[in-house]
Structure formats: C-alpha cells, structure tokens
Image (tube, rainbow, N blue to C red; front, side, top):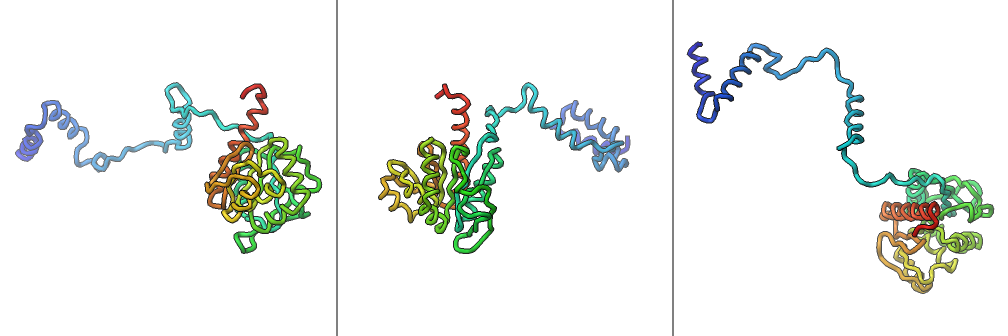
Length: 264
C-alpha cells in the first residue's frame, strides 16, 4: 500500500468509523475505482428505456390491491337519468348559466336551456354583452314533468323579464309543487317572489333583492349558499363553486330518494 493510501485509510479510520464501516468503504473503493467515469458520476447504464406509462399504471393499480390507499368514500352517483331545465331569457349573467351548466353535465345530467326566445338568448357580463346561448326548448312547449329540477341564473334584465312571464311563473310553480329542486342565483330569485313560492322560505340573492324577499315573507341571509328544503340559492358569480356543489348534492339526494322510496 502506498503512503498516500495509508494516509487516506488513516483519515477514514477515525474514531467515528466502526470496523464494519471501514470494510464497506474499502469494498466500495475496490468496486468503483475513481478512474471509472461511469461509477464516479453515479450513472446506471440500461439496455432499454423503461416503459414509464406501464410503470405509472402499475403504481396506480397498486392502490387497488390489499393494503392500498382507500379514501373510504363511495364514488359519486351519476346524474345520467336527470333532465335539468335552465330557465332564462335575454339579459342573463353569462357565468351564472354556463358554469353551472358545465358542472351539471360533468356530473352526468342532461341540461336544456328553456326560454321564451326562439333560437338563442343573449348573455351579459355585468353590463357588457357577452355570448349568445342556443335555446334547447321553447318555454311554451316545456313540460315541468319532463324535468327533475330547474336552475334560475341571474342578470337584472333576465330576472325582471322572467318574473313578468305567466308561463315562467306557472312552470316554476309546478316544479315547486312537485318538491323538485330549484336553484336560483343573483337576480334569478325574483321569479320565486312573483310566483308566490318564496313565503316562509330561507334564501339568499343579490343584496338589492333582500327587501323584496322579506316583503314576500322570506328569511334572507347574506351567505354564499343557502339550502332550504328544495331551494338552493346564492348571491353572485363569486359564489358559483359553492352553489354548484350544493345544487348537485341536492340532486343526488333526490335521486337516492327516488331509487329507494322506503328509506328516509
């Protein structure tokens, strides 16, 4: 052994190294000499690149075997057998129609835009014109018994026009009489008042409607979402995530009740 090797061995063999550690170090030096660039750079050579997609699938599937991670929650029920009506006319708030519509469809529901307009309705982003949305069903031909629930988007012009429509009032009255879910946001709640179904109910809405609701015999709350039996209501576009979640939760409860009528 050279003097240099002896010096390195003595440095490595300090008081903190056990005989086993020194033996292991010596073996490593013999297996991976410093002159080997592959060993010194810690690179492992492989003949063929691994299949990363298969590896990811194996990792994902490992949770399905015994001992895998389980959230403990059953998969959410699909709303595939539910038809939902979105009742609107020109002047609706765009986000309050499109965002809930997307969430409902992703949950499996079939969604129809129902309107007194024949082909499409004009959306707004606050006071600016936005997208036009195609009408799926004329209000005059829409049957309440064909729908499991109704969504009422906001928008001042939309809400004010619908509350003056006898057909819209009759439609929402029939939905409520059947105890089907009604979800209103922002100025969409005006129709509940004019249809005479807001009395003794707890709701929220755009704040300027609170006096209208109280005068109609409602309890008005300043909360992002309020659930009262078959009613779900919210105040504004910022509340849409909570609004969607509460509405879809209510729909799933209704679906469960319909599937198991003897259960409470």
